[in-house]
Amino acid sequence: MGSQLTNGYWLVQGTRTSFYAHRLAWEAVYGPIPDGMVIDHKDRDKSNNKIENLRLVTRSQNSYNKPKVPLKLVQQLPSGKWRGRNYNSGKTEWTKAYESREKAENMALARRLELYWVI
Image 1 (cartoon, rainbow, N blue to C red):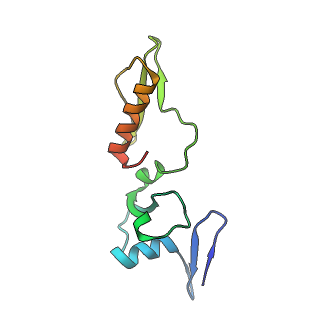
Image 2 (cartoon, helix red, strand yellow):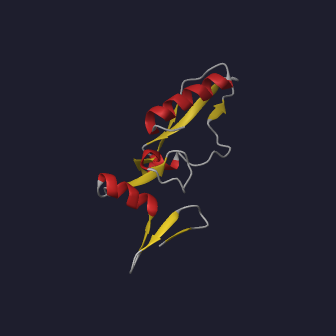
Image 3 (spheres, rainbow, N blue to C red):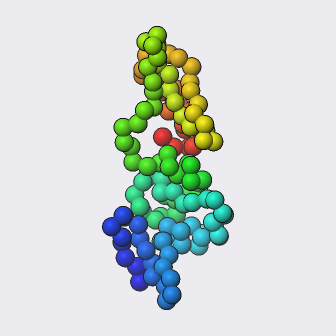
């Protein structure tokens, strides 16, 4: 028996415990989820548990695939130039300075894609 929770995830009820459907789907196809890893919904739809929508990621990678909220992706420097920001292994990583905000954003997003596979 299963039910959809208010947070969007599907929960499958066993006789003594409950399991998230996306984790069951992953384990049915690929086996146990390694320690420190989580299952991410690529399209951010927590109810879409099709195997092609799921991927194994670290918690850090998973945090980058959350719905977009205003985030400080770039910073304007006193010189008027812009630089982009990302986080890599818990440390802030900056792009070089660019004349336009758009160029700094694009470079930061490209690096984010390189680091985490998602924007």
